[in-house]
Image 1 (cartoon, helix red, strand yellow):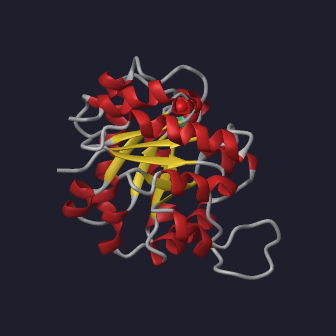
Image 2 (spheres, rainbow, N blue to C red):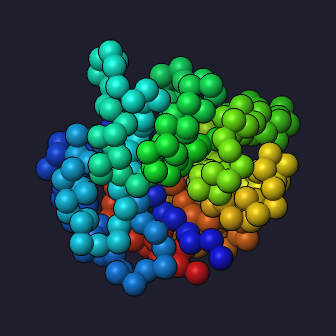
Image 3 (cartoon, rainbow, N blue to C red):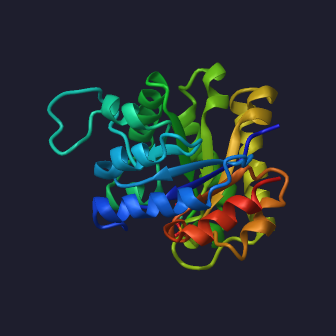
Length: 252
Ligand code: PGA
């Protein structure tokens, strides 16, 4: 039995530490302490501490939105991964915004996954195709290539610790979520890729989330799909009521 995860990717949306702190308290006040869903909040880095403090006495987990692969050194503007590890159990790696806007490639993403695992932080590794790739029938090829390029060098026994998020780029922030059937189809395929890269055990244990315009109205249908173990939520994670309804939808 895979424990479902609902992770809120706040991106750069809360503009102050105070806004992050208020959002965390709102989510906390609506979170059922007996929930069977692992809830992860991913605030902007400078707000990690206040959000972690707010959630300290709850089972809510904290995630970072990024991680530098090097442990220390001359990397102006970056956050040392060990500082991230002081607050975070999870980290989002390979999000399409980082791939597209910050030109992160598969190799760089792979080195971040290695660093996260070394520090005991669970990577939420994002993959997904563009609309062009979907319309050109290149979905499986794209996803398979992203998985192979970033996970081939990870030791087999570490694969089940990773969380994969399928986030079709055309669905992110557009209000046009993939249909539950499409999400299930690709996530089933991701499980097959993990099986061929690793083994049956890894494929049955690894948690795979769907992300891209998940909201309180579509969460239930997405959650009802066999292979979907949770959601990576952007916009709807900024509203405590919507976010808690999404958590509820995944409480199988
Ligand atoms: P969205 O973002 O829910 O706003 O589409 C998802 C994500 O980018 O992780």
